[in-house]
Length: 149
Image (cartoon, rainbow, N blue to C red; front, side):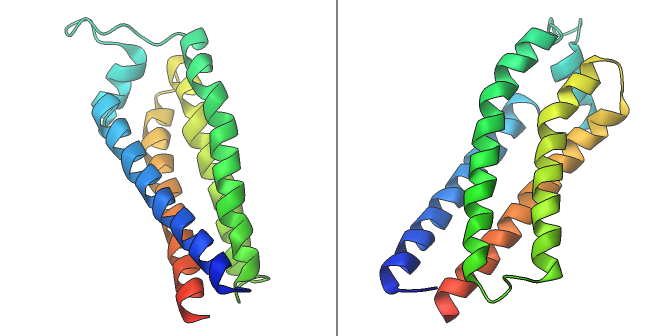
């Protein structure tokens, strides 16, 4: 990392990123839930609890702003990896591909769930956790880089 001011800026960004991830996980847990049944009920509805199913238009209204937000957030976090000693490693390539693939699965799996592909209920939960793991691991690498360099 080039200088002290840059380290502070990246450090504060990473702290706010952790707060963003924490709040996102709390909202996901409260709104959708992490079990097969809760994800199924959220997207496909539940007559017993008077929960309507999600429509394609409703999902699109949720996903469109998230596409930009996810893309921008991932790009900024991954951009900071260029300033670490792991810059041109296979590990970074895996992190980059995994971040974008899991974010895409997390965003677009609801469309497949409402289309009748029950497998994507599992994919929604799995991609959520894998995305968070990869981003938190990336944040760990960045914190380690600004502390020890």
